[in-house]
Length: 346
Image 1 (cartoon, rainbow, N blue to C red):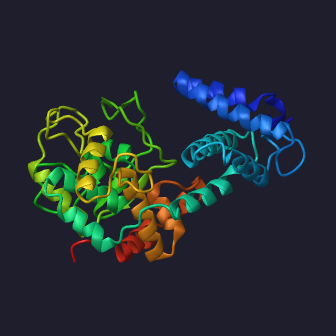
Image 2: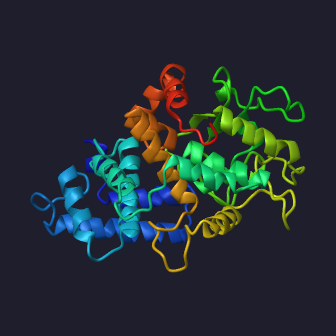
Image 3: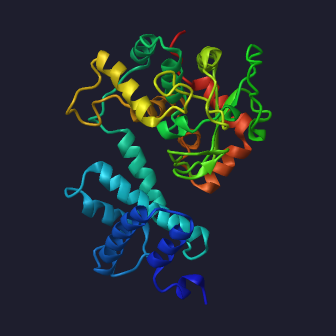
């Protein structure tokens, strides 16, 4: 008898495992609401085929469910719901309870459509370079450039420690930038871990942000980002944390790990000065830290024509694809990135 047949209630099974993994009750309640709704949709026969259940659903059933949410929920809420179902399938597939993840293909198409949202503000590289040039504070400049050059989420940026950075520049003897064996032989690069979780200790410090990557990712550092990080590290205050965060506050919380709230605040100030942020404007119009992720995705994908490399760098891809790029990092990822990454000052 297969494990799928043995699990009478896959949703309950998943939620029990999430509790053992330490997910907060509020999170589990939100998961259950979405998953039970998806389950009811299938049971009522509203999918692409006949009445079914999550273990038997196909990608067309998942597409029909997402379509049923349109008109009732905002695009961001729909994306959140779809992500919840995708995580459910991904986990059940990993433990051997389900044979496949029918939501995976749907998520790829959703990601593509979101990044091509015609209502989103579009900024070219030259104009973004002018925006960067207006940011003179070494910390703020390094933070914004890191987001633009790597496509990482703001929480992932705040969770970076010094050990996650490898720079070959000889002018940084003050710091030991060789703590990650995962960066050996990969040149100047950043290691974006998948492990940091809000409320859990990581590298000796309890984190207030979670990284949302499916797998850890090594992202190249080009010459522009290297210069900005070197400039920042030259004036970086001593840290309060034994984890030695890469980015620390230079304001009221002197030396404390930089927070996502602080990053959003500063980006908003600079965006307002450019006329890129207005109260009441939609998410597609205002420039926020998340907008830089969209900028990275759009421009690098257009330049490379390689969706796989871009999705690897974003940390969005499934295990089989990410393993391909992990094992071929030097030849494919780093070379493709350095040959195509946009420059702002040359």
